[in-house]
Length: 428
Image 1 (cartoon, helix red, strand yellow):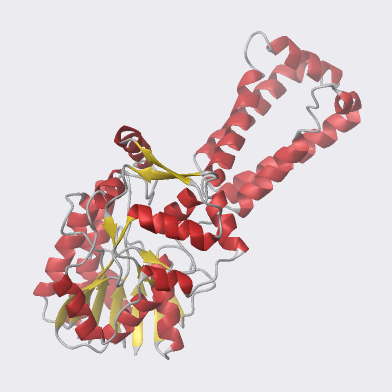
Image 2: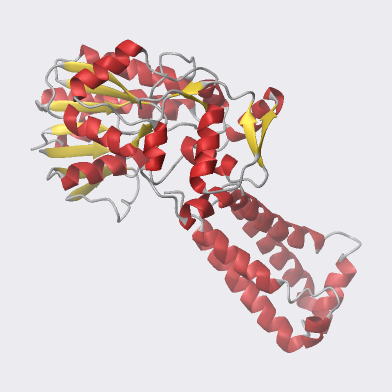
């Protein structure tokens, strides 16, 4: 079959594409930005999913397409209209176009629990589910539970980060809420089986084991090979403060949406489990069996340990650039800055210009780093400036290498830290 996959850069979508491509399907990848190179596909289409809300956006791309799999989603955004468009208006236009072009099959990847929580993420997904079911076209709606596998993204990355902390495992409250994790291999098999299903189905894609969040975290830590740690309950008040901060970070698992979704048992009923197994003709593995079937690597442990250090590294680098720019301009350090430029043989007439220009550049670079803006470009500029500053001062003021507070030597670890920040920049 020739299949159009929307949201092809997503964690789940990439797993589905790899599975279906291995089975001989021709995959057309529809993405918001550039397609990751490790996604097997015959061609790609760029589409702004927040704006592709008319038939005209989709009709030209559905010629000779047999099936469409919609995997577009955004977990957190500061713009409610953007989430509504991505979850409802855009897929509505796509599905209307599918109906007009007589596409054989629609598969829509939703989320388990969208019918249990009153947040925009859930209600927008539930609304498009209802719309799909009203269309005269074969369709399967799949609601995955917590998805885990060899890689991770979003909630499962957060879980790995929590269990990667030394000595303790922070728990959201008592962490007694039930989850039913499903392995990526089982989820992709469900999608493949659904391609040939006639009529309409709504499938809750869950594993065969119900576990509390605390049990999941303990099993993950053991799988990663870390030593035992103390589970510490984090008060709800602190969790909600963290969620408020996370509201301003796109796709942050730590947000009001994430907390509300995680505050209820996110499991399927026995009837829903039986329906799934009767239709797909196999029983998804348990979380325990899924972990036992994977071998954790040193890269998995790095990812867990670096989960919280990665943003801390970026914030600290941003802080030092802003601090260095501001500290040069305050009244009681201004004479020191002027004296330094005099020693560096900068003409008196240009000293004020140099001071404000260089301080402004430092502050702008720091703010860009804090805001996570084009880190590869910003980091490259920062490294270039450190190199130029170091070279300049080494020739004109070599005695600063022997300064007791080592201001020059500190450029070396800062340079290295920026390179590490750049290396860790990609989330996918």
